[in-house]
Every structure is written in structure tokens, then in C-alpha cells.
Image 1 (tube, rainbow, N blue to C red):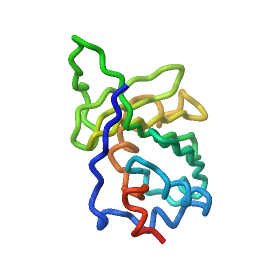
Image 2: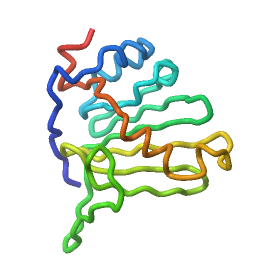
Image 3: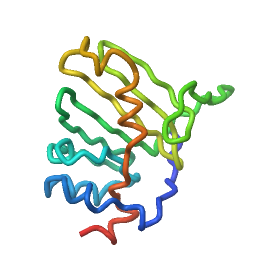
Length: 157
């Protein structure tokens, strides 16, 4: 496994309103994250945030109006000799991304600033209009805001 050091966003990019919308325990765990944490700026979703932060990765579970949203970030990567990384055929936050659906769960995956990110959207009713295509997971992923991490904890309340 290769462990990278993320490129941290500037402290001015911390979205304090989004950070403050999370429960206290989630905010404290965000402060320990070894990767930059980007989340949807939706106060209802953020109010349900459950955060798990470990040495190489952080995952945040959110509850939306009609779906569960999971945002994960990892600074660890498995590189295989002779295998060249591919760029995905979709764009997320200006980066090449892979979008897929498995068992009704939409997933968008990309690499940004040395960190692998994943956004998953699991709709309560997979056949609902909002989950009929990749649009919802792409909308969520493209609207993420920076809420912090250990590399920027000094600016968080």
C-alpha cells in the first residue's frame, strides 16, 4: 500500500456554516481526520452526520430526505506493477471519475489532491425518479464543500 499526504485546501475554504450544522461528536471527529473532509452543504443532512475517522481514511454517513449518503476519503492506495491508473469517463469536481450503480446504490469515485473520494447514494426507493439515473450522485458529489480535517483543525471552532 502507498500512503500519500493530501494537499490541504486553504483555511479560507473551510465552510464554517456546514461544519457548525453537524452534531458536536461529528465535528470533533472531523477535526481528527487525516484527509480533507468534503461534505454536501445541506443542514438537514449534516445534522444527521455520523463520522468514523481512522489513520488513513474518514467516512461520513448522512441521512437525506429520501436517501442515505456516504462520503468517504482515503489517503491509502494499492498500486499494481504494470497497471496504469485510468481516468474515469465522468467529471466530478473537475476530475475524471467513475460512476456506477450496484444493487440500487449509485457511486461516484475520483482522486483529488492526493486523496481518493467516494460518494454513495442509496435511495429509500431505488425506482424513484431521483434515483433513476446517475444525476443525484453527481449533483451531490459536485456540490461538496470543505468542512475541515486535522490539517486545518486550527481554524475550526
